Amino acid sequence: MKGAERMSAIVESQTLAMAERVRRLKNAGKQVYSFTLGEPDFDTPPVIRRAAVQAMENGYTHYPPVAGLPELRQALCAHFRDAYGLQYTSEQIVVSTGAKQSLFNLFMALVNPGDEVVIPAPYWVSYLPMVQMAGGKPVWITATTQKNYKITPEDLETAFTPKTKLFLFNSPSNPTGMVYSPEEVRALARVLERHEHVFVVSDEIYALVRFEGDYLSLGAVDALRERTATVNGASKAFAMTGWRVGWMGAPQWVADLCVRCQGQVTSGANAIAQMAVVAGLENLDCIEPMKAAFQRRCRRALQILDVPFLTVPRPQGAFYLYPDVSSLFGKRAPDGRAINDCEDVAEYLIERAGVVTVPGTGFGTREHIRISFAVADQTLEDGLTRMVEALADLR
Ligand SMILES: Cc1ncc(COP(=O)(O)O)c(C=O)c1O
Image 1 (cartoon, rainbow, N blue to C red):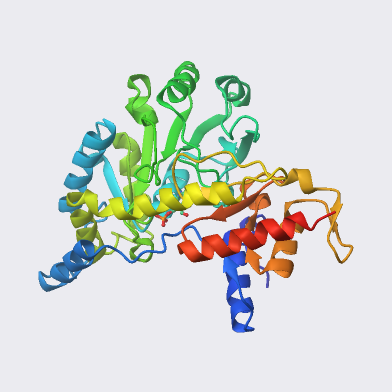
Image 2: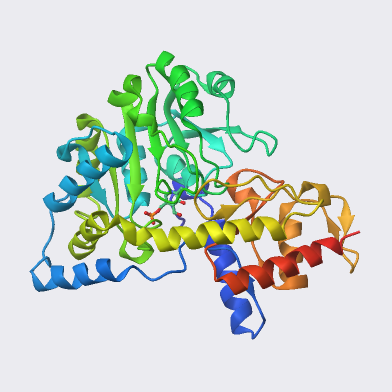
């Protein structure tokens, strides 16, 4: 017996593969500095945890409506409006089991076999496999280190064809931490405006984890209101990765299709967790201490990595650095091994320094490694110092 054809192109997530590597090294008693995981190292804030206990006591233990509890959809409707100027009614909001499911619902609801989905690279690891599972054809536009990993309106214009169905946008970005300025968003929106057959999916899961600058949500641009789905979730901002709650706002017809899809797969997201997210939205200041820690670590990491052989554009949000390591290609490790791409660099760092990063290949580039700074300050200090020392040993 063989598995289904559709799985042949689906690879294991590189981030999870590296996390598994960390587990194995630790079990073998090795000193490991792991910068792999895209999750806050904080526990969920107490005000949110207490709301979950209360929800259980209050009987939120039954199947919730597929699209989400009315309490949460109303709170999200207000949050979309107040934080981003997005005008979704609560009927247009669909709550899911993580933003991952929101995205998957959207691809299943909108993409026909052969439809093209335009994705700026570097991109988050799961976009490609999800689009492929829905039968779509990912088309990516690579933004270089020199362009601060941001695509230009010209890049976008050339990527669109009559077959383009979706444009998938992610700012703040995983893996680069880059945030498009309102002017840059408006410039991309002007291109999108001219291509009326293209629907927009804007993944804004890191929007509350920003350190500087103004923010403009693509769906808040007038011309795109009727054809943008905005995805967000509780995992990153509220340190709620294990609770599995994400959501999206979309035009009614798209929201209805997503509800139909989700209703046959998982039904409504965990009711207790949904009520906990309501408490998070009502107490947004619980995010601030975490955000301050990310910002502090980001500054410190940039200081440590300020060496001639690395190029590290400064992130404006999320909790990742995406150093360009290509100046090291062609060098040799002290044991004679050749370093030719980011996977060689990542492997060398594990063996030489016990430092685990994620090679850029899973994010669509070969010149970079991803470092998550959602780690304790001491791990950051010691691990990155060892990393720089090890890289300086390459000849
Ligand atoms: C860019 C991006 N989108 C979506 C997700 C999915 O988040 P979740 O399913 O935990 O809500 C992640 C998680 O790593 C992410 O980095």
